[in-house]
Length: 117
Length: 117
DNA sequence: ACTTTAAATGCAACAACGTTGCATTTAAAG
DNA sequence: CTTTAAATGCAACGTTGTTGCATTTAAAGT
Ligand SMILES: [Mn+2]
Ligand SMILES: [Mn+2]
Ligand SMILES: [Zn+2]
Ligand SMILES: [Zn+2]
Image 1 (cartoon, rainbow over the protein chains, first blue to last red):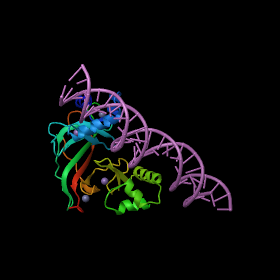
Image 2: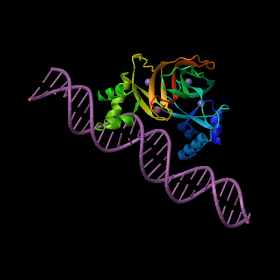
Image 3: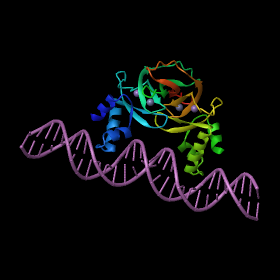
């Protein structure tokens, strides 16, 4: 519950390490299991940034239970390296090569965040 | 050179493991170093998929040396889990929240690839 | 309140991925 | 042929993430 509150309260996606230092009393394996359970329950979603770091963020209202598609845009600040979930959802008109059928899309925007600009 | 040929020849992005089994004679650390050198030289680029697996693909003609921006779209097949570089580049008209300045974008499309459909 | 049962936690061990230091081999220059 | 530098292989280490098992904690049943 504390983990979920932390994820809900902060405006950004948090890495395992960040959560681990926040809850220094909790064993890291417990944290792994908690986050996995939250993800499977559709409460949080995982974001793997361009640096390969996995972060977690709470799912918003528009996240369906079954498909668990998180189709909103993610923002990765090149200065502070934080990751934010943007409310913006975007479905661009991509013309893919023949034979390719699109089922989902992941957009990650890089730039300078609100706090760093 | 063999590694570069392999990456150029195949139409997809290859993971370290895949390359390692292709060149079973080569030590895995040498492979790490070769790929790192290629990346820093701007010959290949890294793609980290939604599963967190790192893959490598050759840079095309339109990859500038300095910025090394790979702004083309990547396709991840949900069936065979292969990753393809699409020629398509897309700059959508995103309206970001105030204070956020965009400098780049990464688009990863998921679906069924040509070979699996 | 006491007992039974299940869930949550912590620890150890392990595997995959990736990096660094160092010795050796290989190839390029002189 | 000798000198020098680059490329390779090995060992060791760090990080991330998973699994098995024992213990603790909490929930239910009596
Ligand atoms: Mn998100
Ligand atoms: Mn590519
Ligand atoms: Zn920032
Ligand atoms: Zn496929």
